[in-house]
Length: 286
Image (cartoon, rainbow, N blue to C red; front, side, top):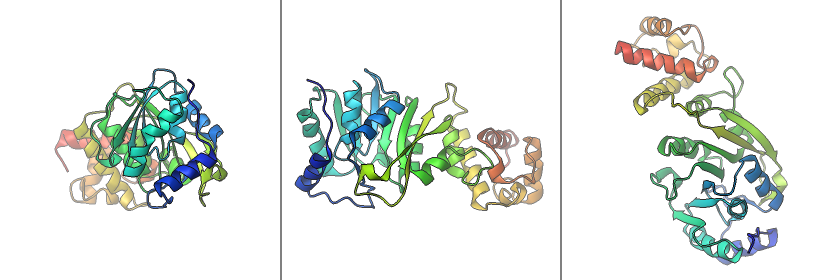
């Protein structure tokens, strides 16, 4: 029996059955267009046999599209009603036993995932999208690629290059794990309810070789946070408190790392920040 997808009428009926009123707090703008969920699965290059984790499956429209492609899915859902209902929805749409596992939990607190997924596919709300992505990339090193649908502002920031207007701390932290790209736009009209913001698809692929261990990552991220806490300030000023306690000490360390003390945080790429963090480790200065 082939897997079938949810239609707009069934999605509304499921929401009514579960007494689910889409809320901004949980980012519950449900996708009601089959072509859109198939597009996400296609952009994510989901293949038969892939092990996929989906965060926030909601009523299951994207979940079924992933399963239709022949993948197995571990779905992490914070809403107990939705988590409890999803397996029955999947079974009614032709999903084979064992193809779907539902984890009823807050994605930001999940530290183990059944099935060892290697692909992340999700529709993430604005307020948790970056924290969830960084948490999953940090916690699950087996995730080697993924595509997520997010608000345009978030997607553009994640994929932004150094020096661009929207480049920020999330851009640098995401780049620690590998390159990110904008992978398509999504019409507002495919959502219910229709949001008042645009959405995009953003994809990532994890670097084959990690940039460093967890200690270096934490040190790098602390420097990134300090650099972007005071945008448009020279690094010798912005980093003075985390690099020796003075502008002079920060300048000396930055020069040793091969970074101009007069540069600004938004001018540096991830490799520059890693060099600063490695120099801090070598000198023992903080």
